[in-house]
Image 1: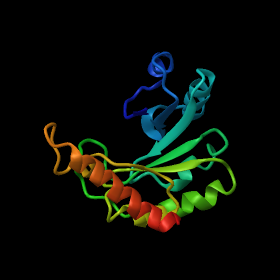
Image 2: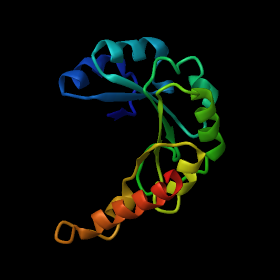
Image 3: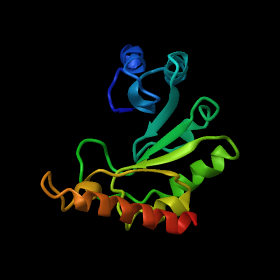
Length: 161
């Protein structure tokens, strides 16, 4: 679950009780991100932190041993269908900062077959796709959804192979 709300802390236990495995919050969501991450872990979930496009990679430098995932927003949050902002340098910097820690880099925003290889080459290993998945399909014709997912996966795997 990726929460784009502030404050986050009052909702942590409810998401844990609902069965959330990983809870991701924005570093800007509250005054004490360390306390929030501790509360997420304390509630039995894995902890993730999200960075808006304008938030520097260094904002998570002191959090790397507290997180399982860093979500790099490659669009400004608010609505779907936006064009991916090229943050390859930021993604690569995060990958270097993470080192050998078991921390995933997730990309959220504008992921499609064109952008998937760019972000995976930079170091991302989890991709979130919305509009690109649902393009061309409908309730009565869902086949394009699977085709779209396979195209994104193939583009990303071309880099991972």
